Image 1: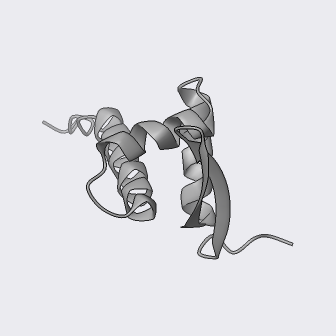
Image 2: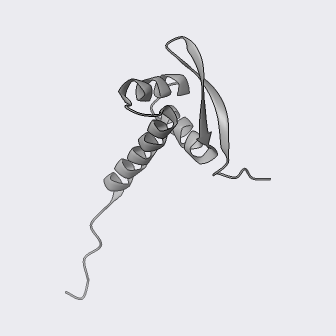
Amino acid sequence: MTTDPSRIRKRSVTLSGHRTSISLEEAFWDALVRIADRDSQSINSLVAEIDRSRTGNLSSALRVFVLADVSRNAASTDQEPPADPSC
């Protein structure tokens, strides 16, 4: 049975030594875990980093962070289309 990626689930993280809960869709949480793994950091340290620079709601800041990361990675992998061999 697969999990619905749009299902919102509460999770607990530690920020500045205090436990706090965040509500986040499975897809965004999974992406955060992958980013933390890629950057060799814990999920708590990644969330704390995002928390320090946010201006609004933490869950929204996490979603925007994931979107920005995906956008940066997509832009860095974009390549020029192959040249038309008929030219």
